[in-house]
Image 1 (cartoon, rainbow, N blue to C red):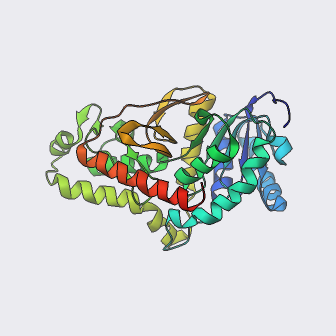
Image 2 (cartoon, rainbow, N blue to C red):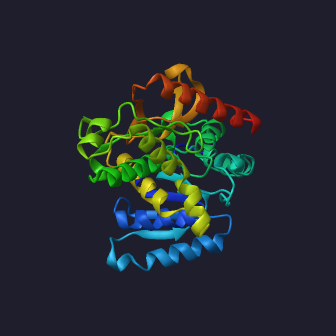
Image 3 (cartoon, helix red, strand yellow):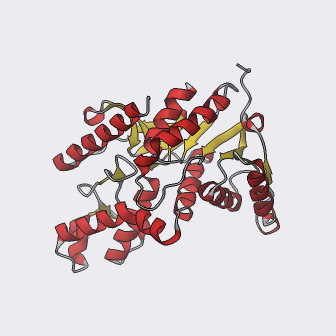
Length: 319
């Protein structure tokens, strides 16, 4: 075990330079949040190529040191983002990836842990909820500093589709997807609103009255979005890259914004000892507190079912 390494708050590291990792690196380069970025990949030449390519745009952005490195180079990063893992293929669910990607995490996380890492671990690889749980178990880091991108992207999709349906700016739509980032995710309609106006009331203001039909269609569109994109272009990466940037903003700026990140459950809704996506206050120390959200009886039942699926998946993966 090495001694604690002082954290550089202007430094970020990305492990995994596939589509998601490289898109996230590009988004973060443009964000101005960091002045140093280290890229790691199982193929060092891939990391070098991405670092070179992205750095060539610096003249039109902000000064930033971008380079390929090793685990020793990332020990002082404020945030380590893990996107490494097998890709989701057409017809494959996120949970189908679990065995392969837990195996990959068993090679990555110990390398970080043995350097006595003091920053925040942001898990993005799928299945993100189970892999966040794996990272927590394998790293021994405090749970507030091990978070997953969770349903931050799903929630953005939810708000965007709702905004389009209602003819309103999606930033004025307040609604969350919770539970698994995957097939058992739950659209929380019971508290959804547009600038404080309950969603059904706002729908009626816009001439929409078939609430149940519309709610089912929109929730299905959100849940199936990744499958639709993968069918067309084999992978999804721009949306998640923007979600990664948003989470990093909350951490670096200590925004204390509420995001549905994957974080550990401690008895809320009767759910214990699994990480899943629930709205939480996110700041410089990672997850500060989980929000005590209100769910309808049907939503609570669905959340418990989602948690049970994730717990079984984690157990089957030996976690």
